Image 1 (spheres, helix red, strand yellow):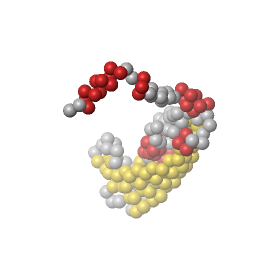
Image 2 (cartoon, helix red, strand yellow):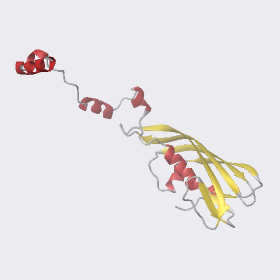
Image 3 (cartoon, helix red, strand yellow):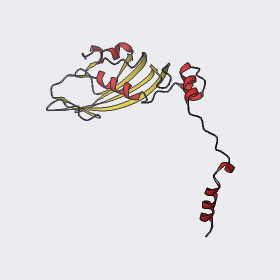
Image 4 (tube, helix red, strand yellow):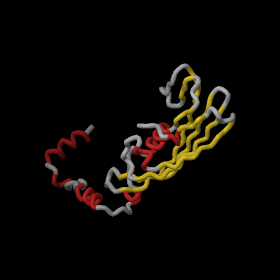
Amino acid sequence: MRKLKEFTIPFVGLKLGKHQFEYEIDNEFFEHFEYDEFNSANLKVDLILDKKTTMMELTFKTSGTVNIFCDLTNEPYDQPIESTLFLVVKFGEEYNDDNEDLLILPHGEFEVNVQQYIYELVVLAVPSKRVHPGVIDGSLQSEVLEKLEELTPKEKEMKAEEEIDPRWNKLKNLLNDK
């Protein structure tokens, strides 16, 4: 994965305070990560960088849709995405991104690349079980759904009580006699 230039923010020249960045994300972005789960993507990421004297706070907000396949029917559909991420950037001896909410950059660093955080924000916002909205409300017509309905085990009707062996009835009477 190479670093994409437009996701690198040179913070050295920025004044103290809040700065806003906007990114349009499509499939080309995910190709850099070799991630092919999305048929298409149309996302907008708003990033607010709050520069302070000894640290920075990054607030990511993403919204839009990704086109994915349903886990039940394999039909493509647009999954809405809404997600946020708050990240604190501090300075230390060496680079450290072990903590998901804290990024430590070495002293003397003059830029930060946010593409990995945007990637994780979007991928983790997609539900683990992907179900087409038409399946949930019953409006989707699909061969797969028809076959699933056909193969679903049906409840068998219980046999009438008179077909039970009469010896069992005698045993049931023992339970009732106290």
